Image 1 (cartoon, rainbow, N blue to C red):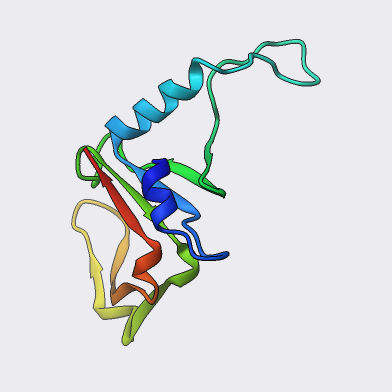
Image 2 (image 1 turned 180 degrees about the vertical axis):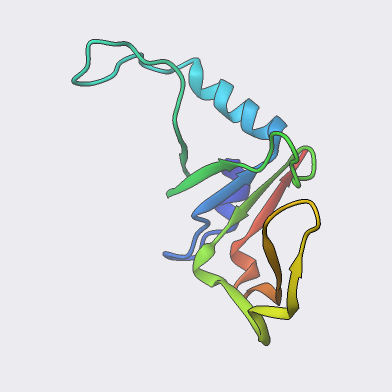
Amino acid sequence: MDSLAVQLIRGTDKPDLIVADNNYYRLYLQSLQSIQRISDSGSSTAGAGFASLKYYGAGMASDVVLDGGIGSAATANHMWFLNTKYMMFRPHADRNFVPIGGERQAINQDAVVKLVGWAGNLTSSGPQFCGVLIA
């Protein structure tokens, strides 16, 4: 993780989001658990594990999130380092969550359904600040 992170930094531009598959997320989580301090400040209960993860390395602080679990779309053994400052959500002008067609009624329920259409892309103007760690 450190060697990839170092390659993606230029000045203040650096990845701020790391998306991991099940395997890499579990490996990162387990590497942190061995050095974990068990406490819950201000409470009489002890806590174990982590509610959220961050990566502090190579002069940066990034959130580490899991794109895994049931129904995962993540490719196995991949970890994506993303700089969200350069990522844009660009919907099509005519398909930005607009209704399509008329109302439809189901025969087995008391409900009316309307289709909603969307088209567009997630684009990046700084792909040199993003990277993929592959096993």
